[in-house]
Amino acid sequence: MARRVTKAIFPVAGLGTRFLPATKAMPKEMMTLVDRPLIQYAIDEARAAGITDFIFVTAKGKSALEDYFDTSAELERTLTEAGKTDLLETLKSTYMPSGAIAYIRQHRAMGLGHAVWCARRLIGDEPFAVILPDDVIDGPKPCLQQMVEAHAETGGNMVAAMEVPRDKVSAYGILDLGSANGSLLRVRGMVEKPATEEAPSNLAVIGRYILSPQVLTNLSRAEAGAGGEIQLTDAIAEEISNSGNVYGFRFEGHRFDCGSKAGFLQATIAFGLSRPDLREELAEYITDIATPRIAAQ
Ligand code: G1P
Image (cartoon, rainbow, N blue to C red; front, side, top):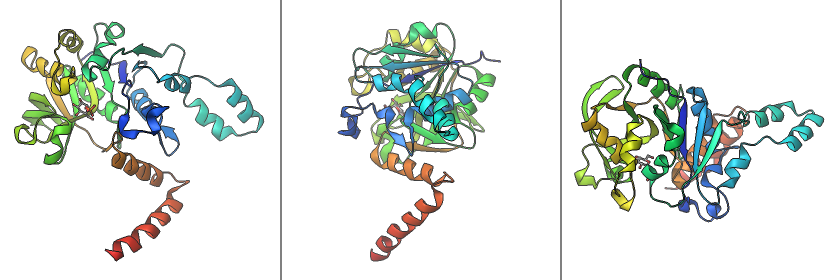
């Protein structure tokens, strides 16, 4: 049995330029799907997987994330006095135990690998998870929980994996596959953002990882890779030759790319439709506006 995973890194230092001007004064992780910010989905998924230590790698302009996870005595009092117990419960569901979240600054934007490496002192010598809040995954069981269960059997390093269209491979880390055993795939190679014609497959890394501390050691001597940045993918790929213990995990669930506008809008609609209080009205509206447009084409 592999050692239990209790720590997770959330790289949240990115500028979110794809969502300008919204992200000019607001972290992109605070953008909301229906009424919950992206970071809340990521935290909930981590909690469901048994994570107890949450490490945010942040940067300048991200203080709203810290405020968000604070308690709010004023709101609590107002809601209690007004007897709004549902909202009070919603508010309390955002509270985290004191000391559960640590914030580390990434002083320069040098890539995902560098952001993860910034948290090395808080990880120490144990396996850890990485969650990219841009990737929102809706599944029968939270994705990281599926991975933690699989990792308990395999140990080593594990990345979430999903097929993407061939013409999109250059936006992802791409896996070169060895043997498969159900949802577990042995990885023979990994390349960050390959050109379409050079990609070993169309199986992409999605933003959920369970990694061995050795990856942090690899990162400490990593050189710039794709896009001139220190890439997490390269540091994991090193483990294929070091330990041979790198797995892709085909998760169950639907992944929304909330780092893109189209993906974010799709997630908004999907999560809206899954909410009993909104479903009917939203479905009716979508049918109303979509039907005449489709008919007109
Ligand atoms: C990052 C990783 C990439 C992975 C992707 C998943 O890329 O570097 O390997 O496939 O997340 O969303 P980014 O989207 O930050 O460019």
